[in-house]
Length: 313
Length: 171
Image (cartoon, rainbow over all chains, first blue to last red; front, side, top):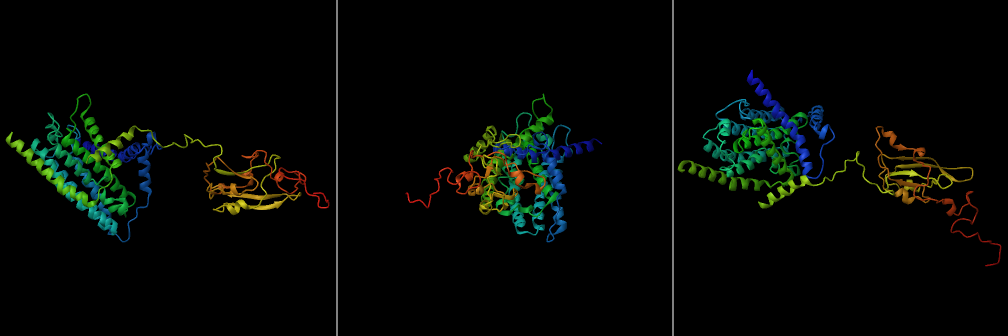
């Protein structure tokens, strides 16, 4: 019974945060562009999300006749499932965790790799050249960044001596891993942006070139799932950064641990939005070049030095 | 690399800048008194319609939103039998005001033309005609025109000389 409550709580929390992020992002972008953004529906426009959801439910959900129907319908579902499944291993607070797994990080990495299927299948099933181009770019980008996304976390794993996220948070009682693992943090942050294909790395859905990339043909709630999936991905990456490098729920005791976790997560979500507000999109080959020629060696050197320090000191 | 952080920081600083947006329905922008928005028809100082139904405004209109029908009263003075402006087409360009020889058609600082029914955007003469003279006070077309329309006698207008007596030999 306790598990049902925790699962329901996590689902409610995560889905509400992701939905709210649609509004938060528009307001923050407006703030940084000297505008107001949506401020008409409810106080500060906070019910804009509700209005958007009602609108998107009543829109025509068009499945193109030239598409591969079962795959087309399945693709957005895969994205939602893989991301929501990963939230199961995230320790929001002591005891507030669906699944205290001892392979939590591997589960996260595996699931985010599975998420590539959603995009590749969605782009392929759309039977549209722009969708396919977007899907090809997405798969190359995500596979590239997957490699050192995992490697960048290995420094933390070596220092905490565990794959369990709860124990990793516990291991940061003395010092947050951001300080000894700064290089790992940098690589993970960049890989995380590329992994969620948020701007400036939104090359798979570059509007200027590819209409909307892999979800050009999607409409109605299927598009909505891709859309919310993106925000879920942002929340997930922010949560993982907080767990791995910023001490998770740890913080001064005058506020509950869940507050500290959400507070730190929101700071990173804000940072993701700030990136979108300020940086232009790199070219596709530049993205690949930075990935393979700079970030991968950096992650490997980080592991090497961390390993040397652990063994010899 | 440094420029990336610089642009991040500069963008972040915009959080403390003043917002450019004017929250329109609550906060109206200032419009100068001679701002050119919606069209009206004005009257001359005697309270009669200035419009002489010459059709110049209708032919100047680039979107063909003006239509009117000329008629004559018992003095032979021309007036529009109907004067209809379709404001769902009007683009507030002001060519009609420029074309008008009698200062009848004028643009006023009202641009809020929202309606729930499209037909309500079509204004008839009774909606367009105002009681005042608009921007040009004291102007009466027939005081400047050469024709006698009961406003003044022949040769009594402004900038007008009395008619020449063709039968006289004096210079």
